Length: 164
Image 1 (tube, rainbow, N blue to C red):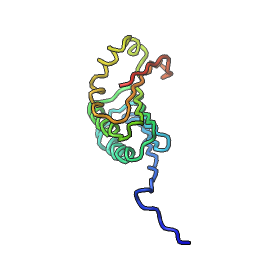
Image 2 (cartoon, helix red, strand yellow):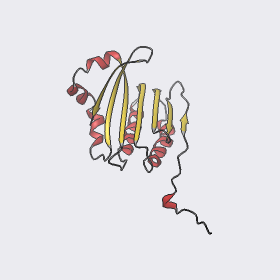
Image 3 (cartoon, rainbow, N blue to C red):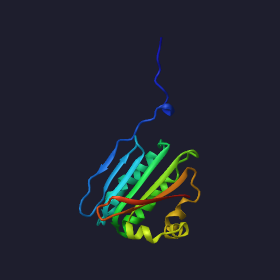
Image 4 (cartoon, one colour):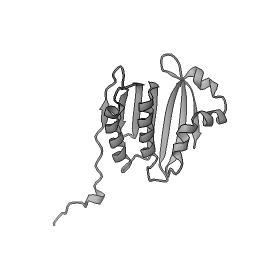
């Protein structure tokens, strides 16, 4: 009996995990295709944001071709500069192109507890995150926004979930 190689369209290669170690000016970045977790934590004030974020951007473009049914994008950034925010927005714009209507992209945002408490009502949350949520227009996958209130140690004290 002869066996043939599967055609290229049926071969789905898993992306290599992309890990970038944290420095005093750059965040730890952990992108894991096998779990669907995309984690950014620490500070992001690099002098050359493209050097850090371009490989991440390229990885995410590959990820959306074979995403997990649930993708968890975790932004646990204490501080980020303008150039970092531009790259993070570009990455988010790619992720909303997940072309699967039954898939979910959860965006997890970690805030200090006092900032979290200031957003008492749903409208406040929508207003605060309007610049982010404007990016979501035209998304095919469902988008969820989960906001966490953290204490001084970074432990989650409160959370709220908003579907967009």
